[in-house]
Length: 316
Ligand SMILES: [Zn+2]
Image (cartoon, rainbow, N blue to C red; front, side, top):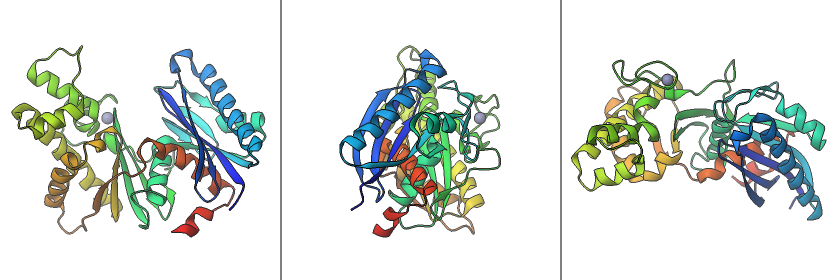
């Protein structure tokens, strides 16, 4: 058993999931801290550095050796330069977070994208374990994906690979947050499902109905809920079929809040995806296994990879 650990942080719009992870992939300590993004990006960076430094100190106090730091952040991330280029919900603009962390902690640091980090963890340690080609799709407020090939998440030329939420699925559909009408995310994200249902039943937008509630009402036989759920399932199947045409993966792992609907989502979605497969091989469609810890575990994997440590792979 190794005493080497990495400090891992997954920074989200509302909270940070943090951990010390041993080089064999075992988590030895977890912490959660509020992001409180309303304070502005400078204050958020201050908290990130403080929390990371605190975890490194706790590791040393427990007789462990922190060897590196991995940080996952949302938005557009230039992983090669270690820069958080842009983030809507945390407000980062061209922030050299890797360099700041190296200066403060004196440890090598890897910076990654939250969904790609989550996909990396699901592909290597979670629901996609044992398959070389995995598409991880996180469905929450928005929809984003990570294409993981042989344990490495594809970053793209500009740090923006995997924006499956902005595949056009309904040219006459509702306008997306990106400005274009008919994106997958505008129809099938958890936020879009709740919004569409409220619109149809004429409920006040002040009391939003969650996508989970729509799923339950659909399962209970409520007609409007069933209609909204089916529309979302069909749109998701269109998006995933495009993903499969492009990437030909063995496994599609569904994560994010909507995946917690379980078989209410997976069963109709498998059927809708099956209908869309012509000559393409149908991927296994499964729910994520690591829950909201995936991004943090992925950040740890990025740090271990940067150090050339792959002990956790030996346990396959
Ligand atoms: Zn869009």
